Amino acid sequence: AGIPGIAVSCASRESHPRYGAAAAFVSGNLERLVDACTSEAFININAPSSDSLSLGARWTLPCTRVYGNGLRSFEGPDGFGYFFLTSGDTTALGSEANDYSAVAEGMISVSPILVHPQVPAGFLSSREFG
Image 1: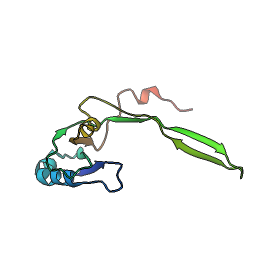
Image 2: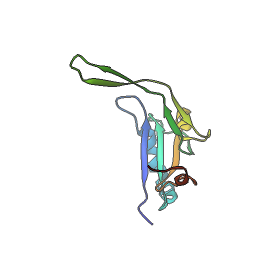
Image 3: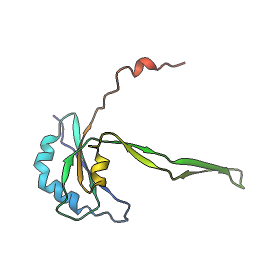
Image 4: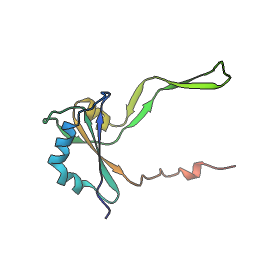
């Protein structure tokens, strides 16, 4: 049946993210989280940076993040090319029940992640080589 897997992330831009809320949630719900794991899925937990012991949690679905970064290039005086990523808008796509939205609302997100994602039907028939 495999080994249950739980991943924990803290959404933060702080140099020292606070994992207290995430740690308290996992320790208080460990048996339920392990029971939710299957041979096909592990559990992914995303939490705000917080030491609060009273954050709510909800089941969510992973969103798709779209990063609007650009690439700026120039040739340096040494003749070599240099490339830099530029900032841009980042959006989260998916239902309102997504992980990003839950964390943005100050909640802990609990998402099942498929170990072997399915390729959409028709994917191979629409591609050719040569």
